[in-house]
Image (cartoon, rainbow, N blue to C red; front, side, top):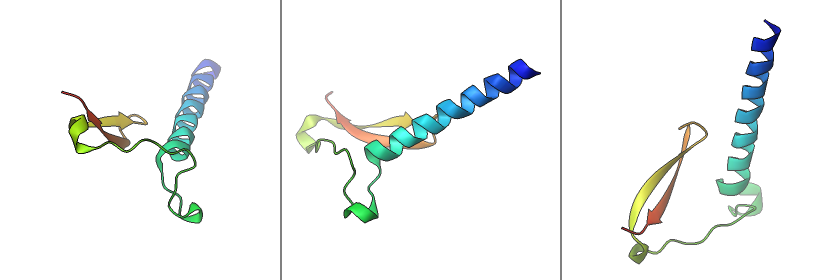
Amino acid sequence: MLALLLTLLGTLRSALRTRAELALENLALLSLGKDAPEGRAVHAPHMGDIVELPEVGGLHRRYIRQAA
């Protein structure tokens, strides 16, 4: 029983860490003038088709351009 509880706590900790990383990397914050703390490059249309990348176990998605 204790082993199961420790496994569940480890899984929860991992999920929360992943969610926090997602928030810092991707989500625009209103308090910062809709500017994410860590920005990312703009993907112009000539860079390829739009591809969906699931994050946080599929709860969130990031869309990027990827060369064909």
